[in-house]
Amino acid sequence: MCDIFDAVPKADAASMEHPVFSLSTKPDLREREYKNKGSWLKVAPSIKGLATVHDRDILIYCISQMMAGKREGRTPSKTLRLKAFDLLTATNRQTNGQAYDGLKAAFERLRGTTISTNVTTGGVEQFDVFGLIDKAAVKRATRDGRMAEVEITLSDWLLNAVNGNEVLTLNRRYFQLRKPLERRLYDLARKHCGQQHEWQIGLEKLRSKTGSSSTPKEFKRLLSKIIEDDQAHSHMPDYSFRLDADIVTVNPKPEFTEAYTSPAPQLSFFLKDETYAQAREAAPRWDIQMIEREWREWMTEPPKNPDAAFLGFCRKWFEKRGTP
Image 1 (cartoon, rainbow, N blue to C red):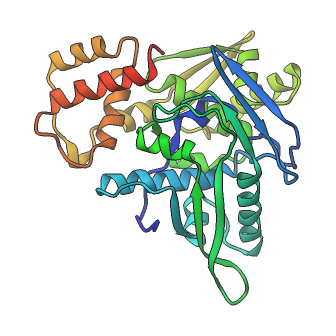
Image 2: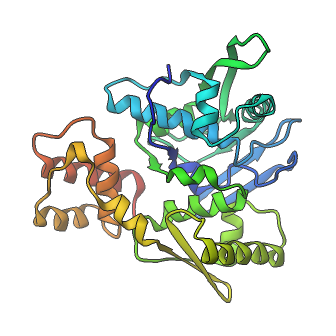
């Protein structure tokens, strides 16, 4: 039961890294294939079209609830029962009849979209074809036919990510981003930049990683417009973007650094200076502050030996992910 109030938004790292979801606001019936450094991903739509970036809100909500449950000592289950109203409210959506219809359509696209990939989640590599969710069912409806309670069974791919703690925290303002490309840019910045001072990527590679079907010229125009709007209104959470020729530079905004480096209040203990030095050896080239933040959010209670526990977490982090 998804009954944890105000769970922190979290998403699986694999779908933040790879272009699993469609950026189109119209039915996307194209099959897509993505390859990068030995990783490959094939996504095929149903007759309803590919699952979209906005459909992913459902998965984010489920993952957030599962991670919050883990912190309370619960064992994650791939089948969750939730209140449709809570899901709509938490993801910044309206709660009218049209919103409930949209939620039903999103379930159909998530169920119909099939994936085959060698991308591992939770240390498990799957070669079979699977859907983003296994099934969804309305368990109780209101008198006017709206969904009151919904039961969702997630894929093993997502459950493995939760069990392996391969998730990242999202800014709640993520759900205020209406343009699909804005959401993908945030995903990639959160995944690759983290708390690093700077992250750079070529324009064409960025276009590929977002899953955009726009021409290079149109993609550059769309990206430039988002950057221009953010410079004027700072609507993009956590990160700023700059385009110089064909190189995109991403930097954390000051408010992001402050929010993500402060220790969690219930776990406000300190680590020794030498522990950070040993952590950099255990996870070379990784942002240790980012790993520490994920470690603090992952814990359910303060460890007896925080320094040893953090070093163990860093070793497992590097073992699973390797050099960034």
